[in-house]
Image 1 (cartoon, rainbow, N blue to C red):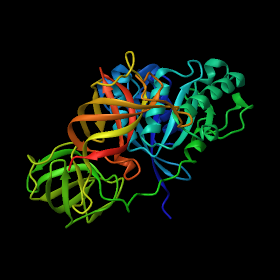
Image 2 (image 1 turned 180 degrees about the vertical axis):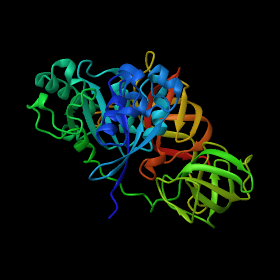
Image 3 (image 1 turned 180 degrees about the horizontal axis):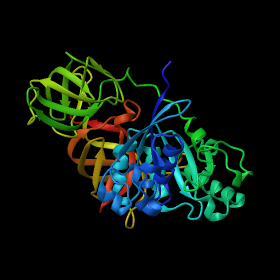
Image 4 (image 1 turned 60 degrees about the vertical axis):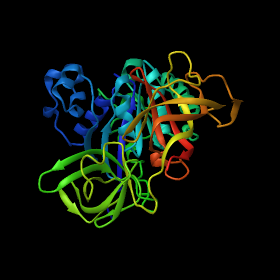
Length: 414
């Protein structure tokens, strides 16, 4: 029996120790050696492991989404290290949509920071249901149980408020990643803590069912011309199954053709299932016909195209408040398009989902609401009740993510 495979994202405020925790896990599990971790990197000793680019190493920052494989006794884990600075939240949206589970890293000395809330709200909105909380830097608070209990309480309230109904059942693991306390073995410094260590926390993650029975949906990330093959579209199968010989359609481009070949990691395959990152060549479709943000489906159940939809959103940050007429950028899978909030239908209690106010004048930071959105041009978006994988979106303005949401209903454009 093959071990379950879990895509894991590490989230949390910058400098709370995400990369250090990952680095320590990889070293203690023997995936990489201490030697591989550069001496010169100083306090970012472990952080550089996940950082592929020299420039990132110099800045001690994690920028693009990096991948590392990790095997535990219970599962295979692909670590997608989500970036920490606010201009990288968009990466997290593309990253987290590939994640089955998340580790939220919170520093014991700083506690809940704006990005802690923002990343957790994004993880919830992007459908990441499995969560383990790592309370890091316990060494800085003297491994104090009272400090841990207080922060655990804050975090249960925060996560419950975002919408995680089971926030109280999550694991909240006190540790010091830098000193290796409670990372892969129990800590002698925190004998008061009787729960699992970080590695045991990762072992609780399970692989979700692949949505193969849903209609086919592949958001196109990129389109290339490959000599000898022709046009190759790159994307990750979100739902359904793609087979060689299938008739498919690209929306909203409206182009259709027949699948000539599929390959993954440079190997030809006859079919692709959800989670597969593939390149595929389609007879009758040229590079000029399709672009990033188009979505592939079968002609009998084509991707839904809309420029007007109703959505449930969580407001993460706004300069003042979010009012009707406000016109930001909407990011949904690989598509992004300008649009506006046409009206605010309801203000909702994020904790319970109950309606607080009908037709409020505005939504503020931390509010949840039901809104009607009109886009400047149509994109593929699905109802969360039908294809949740393509119902989620982020709202960006002025270089930051101001809201995350999911489409609950739409007006089909085709």
